[in-house]
Image 1: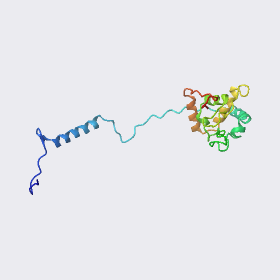
Image 2: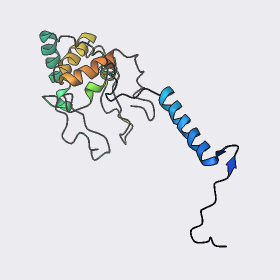
Image 3: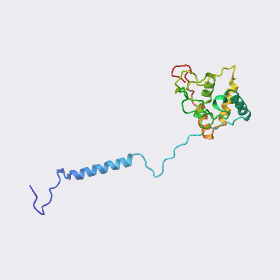
Length: 190
């Protein structure tokens, strides 16, 4: 059925005295008004977020750093390099499938560990979880080889090699609850 030329289209269905269209428009406008009035405040400027207060960096004792370097050169440099630069290609497995000794300067990952973790690694040794062999990657240094003070001095030496940003990160690790290190001799452990 066609419409005659010039005929008006039929009126929309009526509900009460308003059209369905008008009622839907009012409901939509009311809903939008409620969202704007009750919704989250929107500002042209982002809300200021409180920045975490940086942990103050302890001052390094030059004599401790110097002694730490001496101990490092005597016990660690043969694997980690005279300047703590790590073995060449330290991120690539060697012929046996083991990762070579990493650097302790800013280019490595030593700064990602707390003082306690670094001491535990030096004291207990380390088997990198990515190594193919079950042998320890780093031998343990017992108390008859390195005293707790010598280990602490070496950690101070490492810190002297890091950027302020890396020292800041590491100091934040020191303030977190300790994470137990897996036994280096455990299968699949470090």
